[in-house]
Amino acid sequence: MAEYRPAALIHFAAFAYVRESIAHPAKYYRNNVQGGLIVLEAARDAGIRNIVYSSSCAIFGAPSQIPIPEDAAPAPISPYGASKLMVETMLRDMGRSHGLKWVVLRYFNAAGCDPDGEIGELHDPETHIIPLALAVAAGERASFTILGADFDTPDGTCVRDYVHVSDLASAHVRALQGLEAGNVSGAFNLGTGRGYSVREVIQAVREVTNAAVPCSIGARQDGDPPILISDSTRAVEALGWRPLIPDLSDIVRSAWHWRTPQTRARQCTTR
Image (cartoon, rainbow, N blue to C red):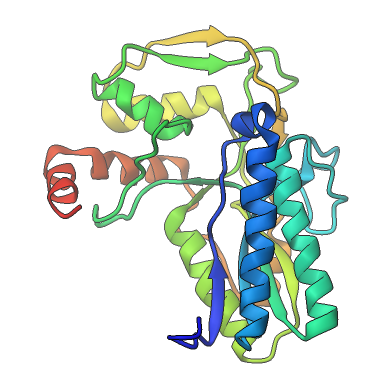
């Protein structure tokens, strides 16, 4: 920060595995909370006043109101969600005390890949449903395990709001532009407002890839709310943001395109 004197900070960094946070909470509080505080203090000391922070719908826990508005009461049910909420709190407090201006962007389920096939999703370990299901479609895994089929949802599986990574990226640009234009600080949900069950995601993968995706049923995992769907009205009104790739099939198709031999070969040679 001292060398480059940035005009703004966009904070993406965090450990982000819900189940790992339940097993190892100290790891999450040390990195996400303590690390977040160090970054915010450094930004303050460097004179940076505009901060965009990547938060999560995990701060809401298992909310009773669906879709979830931005002013819903936070009630995280995992250390991961609690760690993200704590940084939101620190931003508010440091904004009042030090004049920092901030935007909090609460991601729902980030999904998909760059439509041009340049950048894709490659976690280790992989826990996200779409790349796991695509790995089965590609013959890299034998089957997909549905973690719980007895939730209080129409087909018994978890329902999530999937938002394309390109739409998330555009929200960050708009948030930063808003801060630079003098907009007030605020928190916004980023989602499409449409929920899809695990079974619906699997079916979308089958249709996009024209491949079989065998499934088995596993046990529920701690920290999994039945339904998470975003009400992003405030982001539409205040940021002028609207998802341009809201359809699940298009999201899956972008991820499948990145996995094709040509795009994956190019991606691997440029690492």
